[in-house]
Amino acid sequence: MLWYNLALFLAALAGFLYGAVRFFRGKKALYLQMIVCGLGCMMLSRLFQVVMILNLGALRQGFHVGYLGYSGMFLFFFSANYGQMDSLVDDGSAALRPYRRKALYAPAAVLLIYLPIALSGASLSMKISCGLIAALAAAAAYFHMKHLIIPDVDYGIIRSIRGYNRFALLIGLLSMTELATLALDMRGALIPLGAALGVDYLLLLPILERGVKQWTT
Image 1 (cartoon, rainbow, N blue to C red):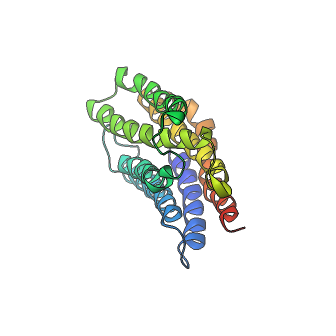
Image 2 (cartoon, one colour; image 1 turned 60 degrees about the vertical axis):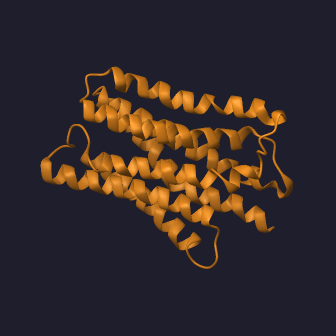
């Protein structure tokens, strides 16, 4: 678990530093900065888990501060897409109702992944912690999914960030799968999960940057 979390910390750190340099210099959109902060939360979560393993020899069972990093990441991702960004493409009309309904498949998938955690032999504190993370991940996943399938608006604003939404949605699904793997003590599955998460952490912000460049070209 040490090398696993260390590798993911370094991947998240690299992604965060890239975003901090690219999106916190000059007058950049708050939308972009919130996503960088989300990845920063996961970076701190991985760092905490590395330090915990170095000090205790293993991750603490049940709730620990590292879970707040998961929650913070999904809360930032949700906040970035909710509100002004979402209002650009969804005016609440009946014509767009089919897209809102289809978008519910994503949070349903997140909650379905949480189900084995709820039914596992994990501690109550872990079930509650993962339940909170699942709720925030589901809320973020709804908007990621909706912005992937809903018709675009003028200037291609939503189409340009669909790559980001695809990767962010995948991070949510993989993160919940990781937590389920830990709850069920299926450590062997962590290697492919970690590889996929590491790639996502590294590519999330470069893909976002490539997309938003279309806003000004």
